[in-house]
Image (cartoon, rainbow, N blue to C red; front, side, top):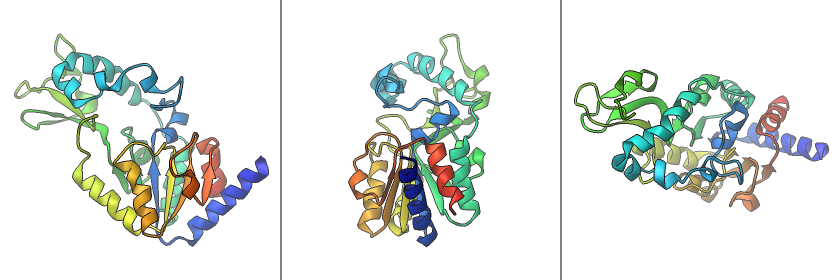
Length: 251
């Protein structure tokens, strides 16, 4: 098994070395070593314990903001103290060496930026800010405390409108500019490196298909099966930290 892992790491290192444009696509699995649970792992995922349609859908926010915030507030507060792990650092180092063009991430935790990655496309938004749904006023998520009313709902200090984190909820469109940039990268990359993603949530899950259709190679580093496994030139399913560090050590 160790020999197989080493062979795969060497193969992926060679693919990165040969590629003139490599793009990473990351999901919840890259942040699991930082202590953030993913969403869909059987028995462990966040959505095993709560129905996302009841707490993480835009209509749920509009219908019952108190219930929404009772779920999201402790989760967002917990995220504020989380630190990047060596898998995030490995991607930042690839970018620093000129071997990685950008990171497209489904994660809202900002850990890629904290780790030093400079070009990060956050297609599901981030926990940096929140916004009033009436007047558009922006607030740093870390400063929301005084905005919560007696019911536990964050309301705008100017117009008293409901305040929502700048993360994409179910039922919302992804930010147009971020998706346009992600699609442009998928269209011109020579290698797409998918890390910690089940590649099942669309429209982001369509990016590997877009890249493959333009002749790019695909490498997948994640636990559990994905719809693209048969098309990947490298498929690694161990710990993302160990896998990426093994690849980095060979570059």
